[in-house]
Amino acid sequence: MSYIISGIQQLGVGVRSKDEAWKWYRKFFGMDVPVFQEAAEAPLMTRYTGGSVQSRDAALALNLKGGSGFEIWQYTSRVTAYPESEALLGDLGIIAGRIKTPDLHRCYVTYKEDGVQILTDLKTGPGGKEHFYVKDPWGNIFEICEESDFFMSKDALTGGPCGAVVGVSSVDNVLPLYKILGYDTVVYDKSGSFEDLNGLPGGEGEFRRVLLTHKDKRSGAFSRVFGKSSIELIQSLDRKPEKIFAGRFWGDAGFIHLCFDIHGMDNLGKTLEEAGYPFTVDSENSFDMGEAAGRFTYIEDPDGTLLEFVETHKVPIMKKLNWYLNLKGRDPARPLADWMLRLLGLGRIKA
View 1 (cartoon, rainbow, N blue to C red):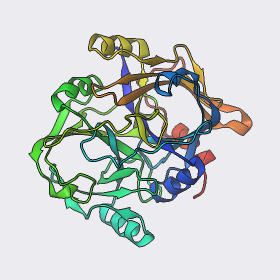
View 2 (tube, one colour; view 1 turned 90 degrees about the vertical axis):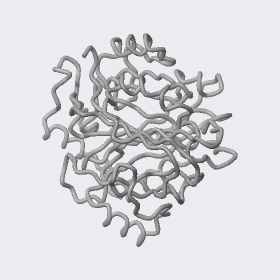
View 3 (tube, rainbow, N blue to C red; view 1 turned 135 degrees about the vertical axis):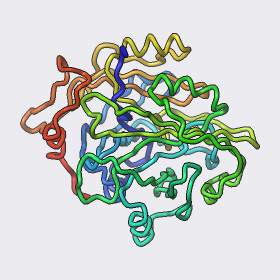
């Protein structure tokens, strides 16, 4: 393959207060390792920010138990906008983040005791596995899934994200795109009404649900931390869906993008363009986030949902000592040694 997808790097979450939201995500999802934090302008994203440069404060946080990260994103040049009405299941865009836990029942009981808003009881989904959904204080929905692939055995209730739930107008139209991204295995493809969705906004409707994953282990520098991921595509069968971000900017409240960690950006771009998904944003050579650097690009799925790709060049280990991990010039398929990945935890923020 001419490009490598190491896994889902992060799920972008737009909020009104980065610090307040991050504190909650540290407490309940263990997202306590900062990869970068920076307040700056976003000049390359004007296509999605009303044609003008906007300022923001953002942090990329990881949970080294395993899984993807969160990019927690807050506007500083304007007030973050919420949708006029609550998004319903099947609306177009990222509906929920999928969070993995080694002990689903312990997670459910703990969240209930701690007052987390639980939307659904423990229910068995179409794939035969139990799961449940919660909502954070800012209206973002997360599906809690029991998984077994974790990087560290740290005593955390959950790992990080292990995928997302994406609303689409046509499952068949979007499947070829996810195949390019390595999602070559259909776990289930079911249509109808589903008891495990009762409690979600619009969850009583009729849907086609397709869960995608990848049969092979991912490769690349951070693949052992990211682990396996799954994308559930949900198509409404009994109503016309709305776009979740209609009339709003990228970076406004909600899930703003799903980001993949990759190597071989030019080759990936050529493959995507030939399939009808050209880059709509491209930082080209190297962007510098102050504490991390690399190249990023965006595409839109058939419904306009934003997918980001990042080719990482350096990440901070201990910025006080000017200690960075340079990823250029190494074998891009080889995972980093476990001890090197654990060094990221030196900057851990306590909840």
